[in-house]
Image (cartoon, rainbow, N blue to C red; front, top):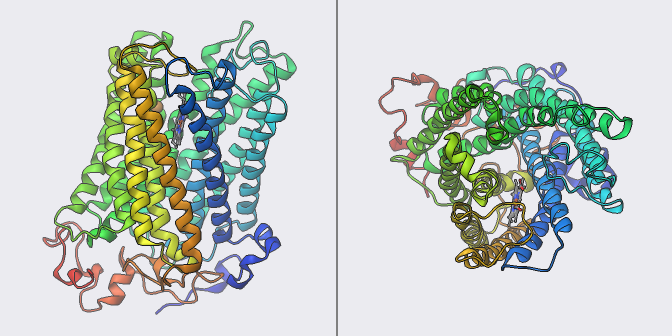
Length: 567
Ligand code: HEM
Ligand SMILES: [Cu+2]
């Protein structure tokens, strides 16, 4: 056993488990685990709000000629829903996981700059509040992408867009600071022996994600400031002789990488869950990490595929079409790696694994419809139809959110010390999965039948009413499923089976700590000589670091010894 050198790590004000009920200890804490949980709480709260907004929209769209919402109100709803889901729900949820897990996975005591970490969270929380304070002045209605000149003063007279921009600026700043913190933590505070190529996959994904954030979010922040200069100081960046297209360039240079910002932590979680529940090391570790590096670069190189319909020069369109198809390669490699990990594995269908498998199917479907947009004529036909709505919900909800749910069920025992109820978990899983596919699968057809998106009502055309009704009814099934997930979280907090240190028999460092981990995370660390230090500890006669990782015949297949661990 090796112990850490104490002085190399920041001493932080951590939260002792017993003080968990003490409110001020929560909000004043700089412990990465507390901040992680605060992010998760914030994200869940706003996921609920964004979900309710979605339900209201679905009720309005349930049948032709719906009268629940006026057109302008519907616009406010989808603007708030989109902004909320992306910035106030999914991003805080993923930052919550990164904050909570990264230091544990690399064997660190905390983040490199714990106070900055807390500051980043509170900027995000403050920004979230700002978005909803806009309700007092008239909420924004220009969409989550706020296309200029629609978002300029003459077309958005209320203060809604100003609240929206200020909210995003606060959150964007907080997120950028947190990303820098994650980068420094990964580079500087890995435990002895934890080389970059030994980091767990989630740590890799978080690291690359943080790099994308530091390049993408400043583009958004700059655009937001320019928009406010236009709106408040009479500037002319995006209208009155300025260029509306300039906004789109800035916005999508942030906006497309943003999609990968949301999906990378999801990939990280999936790459942790699938190996553990297949009883095999991840297949092609180097490829999973390396292809992510390629994606980080390419994610910026594809951004104008959101602008195929604005009339860019043809060679420009073709270049972006090509890069978009190219990015499918490293993404496809990952899917193949996950499937190869499952191959001949000894699979345990626990709830985290169920969500991971659903992720695999749904994310792949979302990816395939995504590639179809890279074909210019297809994009020209389908852009701004429900085919697009179906596509991005398959990626964002079917991919990201399902992976977050997988991670939630996987890490809940670590975070609380108790197991989540299994039967309730399975029931909720099936409702969520059936509901989700019911909502969005039919929207592919609706889009191909010509139904435009961002419409508050539609005519009684053949088939449209039925498909929309299926979508709306399924939304309630999905909603009930998600409520059951919440119920499970609360009930299991009191009644769940005690989890112990390592309930899933996983091999990465976070499972070497108490559940929940003590302040400071580790008192001792196991020697880290491979990617699976806890395997080495449990199997001194057959440690991972003796196997050459690439050429070993048995590597990538389940080992007979691992079968012992299967229940
Ligand atoms: C309960 C599940 C959900 C339902 C029922 C739902 C439903 C809807 C509806 C009806 C719209 C308006 C579409 C339009 O008018 O064109 C919409 C838009 C949007 N949704 Fe969701 N949504 C859900 C979950 C999510 C999630 C998890 C995210 C993101 C992570 C998300 C992101 C968005 C965005 C960005 C828009 C704006 C689309 C646009 O460009 O107009 N939604 N959603
Ligand atoms: Cu894109």
